[in-house]
Image 1 (cartoon, helix red, strand yellow):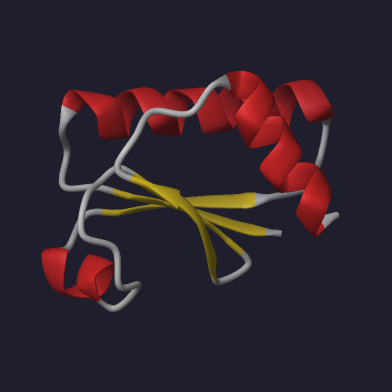
Image 2 (tube, one colour):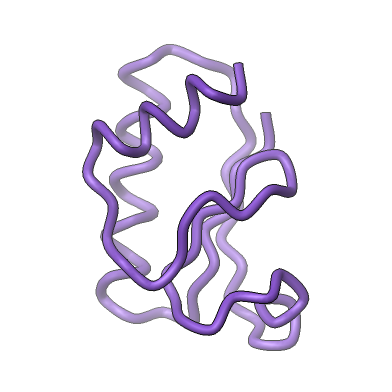
Length: 79
């Protein structure tokens, strides 16, 4: 599973990355987590606001902080 956190380094982006890493560890799944902070790369996903969450090249959410339960739901949809 490929998970990307889209964001230029704001506090919400960092918090989302921490939450995703914690969730993946709790779920004990094999996932490659990448932080994408280049604005040109972020724009390729078509999101207007960060942070963004991308799982297996599908934008799952953008522009808001996600709860751990929301992150788990998105991951479960992709398993």
